[in-house]
Image (cartoon, rainbow, N blue to C red; front, side):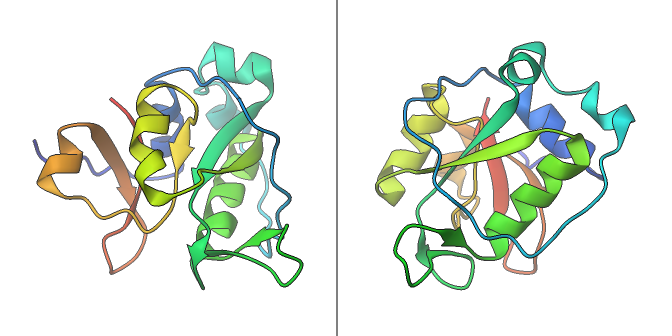
Length: 150
């Protein structure tokens, strides 16, 4: 299965439309250094159930600084992937609530069961993973991507 490349901010709205998430845990506090303006045209692409809920549930395994990690207080998430997803949420005009997946091996099952709408955590697109989840957008030279349930 080929990796799908989608341009612009609409890629995340497409990923969200793949399924509905059930938020099981409390949101983890974040520290984001990026802020962007919402694009009202993109908000209309958010699936109705997520728009009604009012936030995107994003999962991460925060143990890989500088991409995603806990700050010194051991409570607040920070890093490049936190900034990227929060900027996507801001551009879509919807909040992002973060969940600590409790381990890298919980990310794909969490997506497949709807616990998370998206996940960002140094996830490489391998043939095995491509059979289970979509990598809908690449954002750096290491070819890591934001993923969603098929």
